[in-house]
Length: 132
Image 1: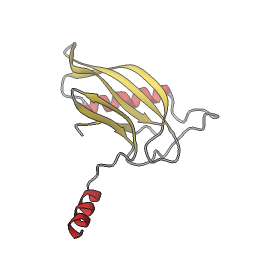
Image 2: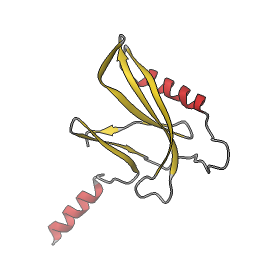
Image 3: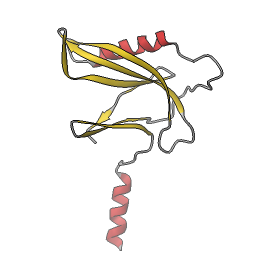
Image 4: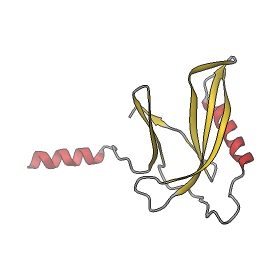
């Protein structure tokens, strides 16, 4: 019984939690997720103006892509979707922008060139976590 309790404590300290996950998919056999580490500081009530414009979201994406893609790679956004997501364990939904994009290197598509990121309404980029 004591060994069981020790194992239970060990496993509970390792983060296998799906808490905060709001989208899952598989790429080449690897599980990928979007996950909120902390609740977004800005949300939308659907009654008022959006707290961030599409122009601002586009600028956030471009800055993120320039800082995070490999040397020589360029991103081209293909979609900006405003979506309500329901993270596991959250008490309510949050509004985010899901940005689809393709990546090119020297004008040629790179392997796995269709990609996506999420931008919350405060302008924070949420990258996918893969290989879980």
